[in-house]
Image 1 (cartoon, rainbow, N blue to C red):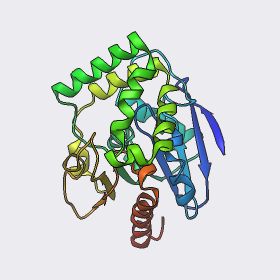
Image 2: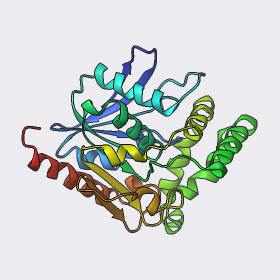
Image 3: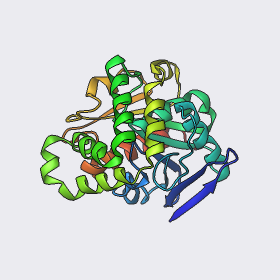
Image 4: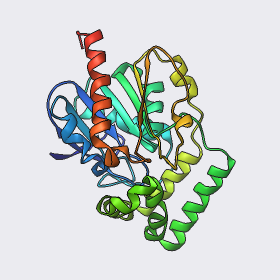
Length: 270
């Protein structure tokens, strides 16, 4: 069911909620929306309470024309969780959502049972990537969303899926084109300026899931699988690009479900 929450910072966030049980929260990637998770939510909702959120500047959430930062995105999610009455939950973020998840784990760890990066990385942008963020913002200012999204979306999928998943590729383009230009431009700046958060993964005692796509053209596997620790689980989706929730939803749902179930078995009080 689609809902809205008005936050105390003036932002409105749209979200969907399905299922019952332990709570899983899903954060989408750049120029995506909660609809990125449409295939995954019903699979997870068989066993869990699942909420997927439109981030600020995306989908049906507010797109204020102000400075965005990864920390501010994380604050939005903390305020939203308080508004909708979430106490402790599992948080999984795709790409941009993963950057936000790491900031959330750094600043609001007491709200988490676990967290995970889905096709994301704790590394900051290098200088070339920062320049590309600025070029992207200039493109959107000059030409609008459509040319930018038309160039971006095919890169999100494994090469073989661009041809074999034409409906899914087109759906991702429609979601992207509908993104607020102001929201996209402000988010590009937030991603460009984000800090290195490798230390969050190294220092956390929370269970962590790292999910990578073997065919990811945006964030290669080594940038996701950055460490091995007893509390870290790595899951490789062998045929997926950057969109495992669309390209391999059964595999991703299995990885998340197994991860959460193992935590529950070790900590029955949750």
